[in-house]
Amino acid sequence: MRDNLTSPYFPNTSKAGLSVVIALCAIFALTSFNRLNHTDLWGHVNFGQWMVEHRALPAADPFAAEPSAAPMLHSAWLAQVLGYLVHAAFGNEGLAFGHALLVTATAGVLMLAASKRGIPATWAWSAGAIFFVLDLPILGTIRPQLFGQLGAALVLLACSILPAKKHPLVWLPMVAALWANLHGSILMGIAILGAYAIGTTWNLFVEHGRQLPAMLKDGRFVTIWLALALLVAGACVGPHGPMLLVRTIFFGEHAALSSISEWRALTPTSLTGLLMIASGAAALGIAKTSPKKWELHEILILAAFGLATVSAIRMLAWWSVAFAWVILPHAVAAWAKYRQENNLPEPVADEPASMRTVLALGVVFMTALLAPPTYAAITGKARGEGPITVVDTPIYVADDIVRRGLAGPIAAPMDWADYLVFRTDGQLRPLVYSHVHLTERDTWKDYESIFRGDELWMHVLQNHKMRYLLVSRQRYPQLARLVTYENLSDSPRLRVLYQDQRCVLAELSQAKRKPSQPSTTPAAPAATIEPAIIPTATPATGR
Image (tube, rainbow, N blue to C red; front, side):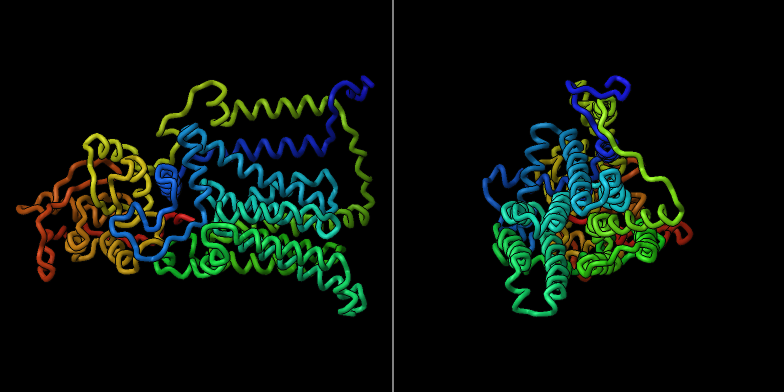
């Protein structure tokens, strides 16, 4: 067997298996190069630490300077606890490794789900590749949503094997129960399985000559709807029970979310818009050329998640998972038709060989050396805080705050506030941070007013009894200049404690000003003042 590089004493690997290994390793390595984003990551870690230390779920916001009276929604408490425990045990490298592992696991489950739909094994790797490319605007940030994407891939796997196989009836409720406590997107899984149940029901109805009694007696009908019922039942296992499903439906109605970029409607010129246009055009082209019949559930899934992504950018996370699963069988059929029409030779039989096993092991080994978190684990040389976090992370001002031992309420950019709370162990209490759904409507409006540099910005700060103000020079140049002028005035109401090329940190005077008194901040020369910057392009919030 030497000529074929195979051996009965060594595992053999097919071309399809090798391509899957290469694809998964590439996805892991590329994802691992993403730096830890300071948006809502540290907010989730903060919540995880609070829950571990108090051994309870918080009844009210434990971090904000002005906690909202709204009840807490604990839809990601388990992910927050896991995130804190991973960071406590393995540091930042552990978070980076977990990020890459979750994305890779989602891609792997999608490959398996696609192969169970009957596509050739040599095409399986493309399911993960399509997911990775379409999800590029989403997967750069580690957050509980990654658990939701993995859950969606597992539901699609169940759709691939139901109702022929019954074992999803055992593990689907467990997936739902975990998903409902890891991230509040369990409704996406219910929508996927619901669309599949509707499509399967229609097919059975037609198969039985449109005779309803005959369809109802079909075991496949019972299996698919039982699976959906078990998924819904599993989703009700958690702190909120069935109310979780109701509360997540109305979650997006909070006033502050309309100012968050990922909750806005799709713009064609953005990366998300370009990916949606390209994938939509690909779907239309494949639909036109594929001889395979489109099933009702496929149309429902694509239409539902396509329209949802157009209305809110964050829904790209679910479009990227569902698109590959739906489209690949039709792409395979279209390619087979093209090959037949052009008399192309049939593909060579995929015979397993030992040399491919050696190559697969080599790829895994090289990936472990290339990926920063696994390299750090192998060599014991972890990256520092700067190299592993995104450039905009307020590391240096946080160092100065810790050195000075500052504590109390602070008005800071919402995406910086989480990191400041993390670094000060909760001693700083932000006016607003990334969990904006916990912020009162009036507080959010005042936050926007402050960072626009409105006329009464100082009065608003004093009205909220803020002790410190942190301003990004690049994002809020108007407010940064006003802070500088106020610091240099004859009767300053604040003093600058720290400043660098990126930010200004000031401490406000504790003396209160009368509400009716107009702002006395010295005006900057008209030629140097730029229009106020409204903080609407703020990073993603904490879901």
